[in-house]
Length: 440
Image (cartoon, rainbow, N blue to C red; front, side, top):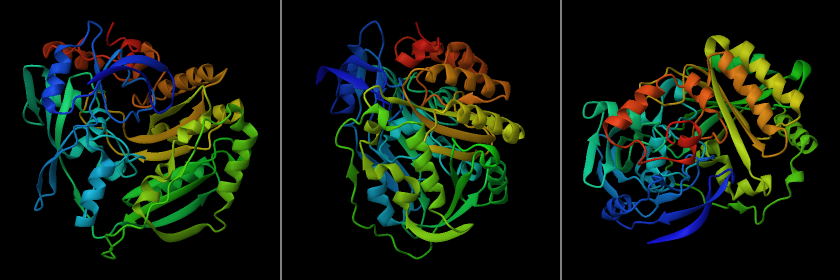
């Protein structure tokens, strides 16, 4: 089943026209790959990567490949088709006392997308990335060649595929380890930080916490530069695995882009920061608002208007954290192009996956509406990030230059070599891979 469609990433920029093939079974994926054009193809799940990483003129939509194939209740190892969503996995396994070992800020991504992005979460400093819990991947590198890749079998291809943005083949299934929990709730503590310096100090003081994340006011200046709310959490132990009824709200139409401006964002940030009236507040919350606060607002990407938006996420090494973060936040505050969605996290050590994003340090993610003057600002931020030895997250990226990519991902040539050895270079390609010089 295929059709010509207008598609885009979650940032709704760019919007392209593509031939979309929607296989209903795994054998249909093989047929779709056989019939792809000369420009190559890319697999696409729920379209929640922000930029152009899942965009191509020929797309294979995996959303119908959603079977749960196997589960070992003694080890927590589950095997699923790559098109299943994290939301579906949670719905099945949380009532049974199991949770995702690592989860990003939305549950509405596919399992294959989680591997292709090697997603991270609020617990990276203690647990690492999602792919650190993957046992093996079933990877289609050509219609007649499906490989089982792991740390011990086709290991080079495994480490290229984890975080490889779908450029090494199509992930058909994934086997990974769930973590046992005794509650669907999180014991959360919120701590106010008066500025970026105190926020980074609080991360270090609470490094032993399983989960930590901070909302940051990126428009505050002076002594309040980078004022933040740090949220730390642990799985509760109350043996309550049931979930409350869900009441999502919807952004019904595309909002005027003028709705989000320096003044409206400043007002929101001030109100949001001051809603916490004490230095510390402790409470118990369900896992959904703790991990997925924006999933309760359907189509929230419409808030940014017809031109769309981009999420800019970078990481800089820990030794440069204080100086680098201060410089970057000052640059953003001075530009007036702030974000009411600004998230700061601490990362642990880097893994062995060639294009995986995290390294030991601090990461900041900010949403910016697409408007005049934005890309020059992001170019300036790129330069600062590179000066401090950092990098930009591919899953969020929509405009990084090829030289910036090559400098910040020094193992890219090894990645290309593995693609060439397995015959996937040029076959699996996206708008992003062409922009970054990985494909022509």
